[in-house]
Length: 147
Picture 1: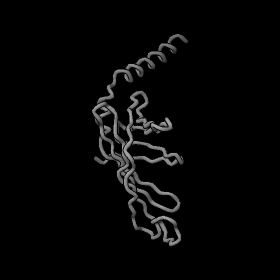
Picture 2: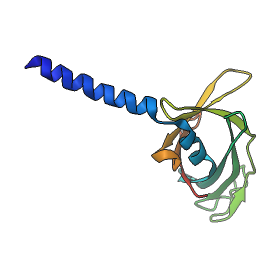
Picture 3: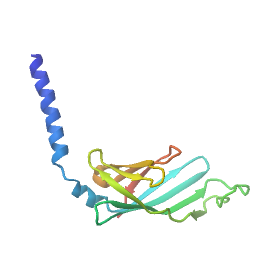
Picture 4: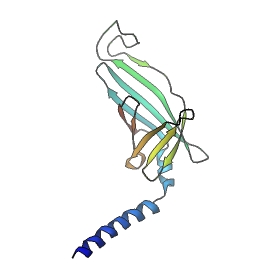
């Protein structure tokens, strides 16, 4: 009886392994290209970000946050940044373009800093329709595909 349980476990693992090995990352690469939007908030501000992913000729990706927006939740003229008046949205411009590689095994985009070697990971969910990115401060952003 015990042998049959092990055979079932091994056959299930074999099916999962075959599925992972046979699925092509090319379809995932094409579905990743586009623009993604994220909304969030903290204690003081609301945020909206737009992320763009472009496929390069060598199979890597250009990843760039093309818009950072934030608005204060409450009026506070003593704040050091532009968000002093509630409801006014302010643009903080674009980030630099970073090169990412797709890891098909765990469906992540990995961006390696050329100077420090530090790796940032962007998790790809739902066949490229959703991205999850965690900042250095530990804030998790979820981006949804818009185009």
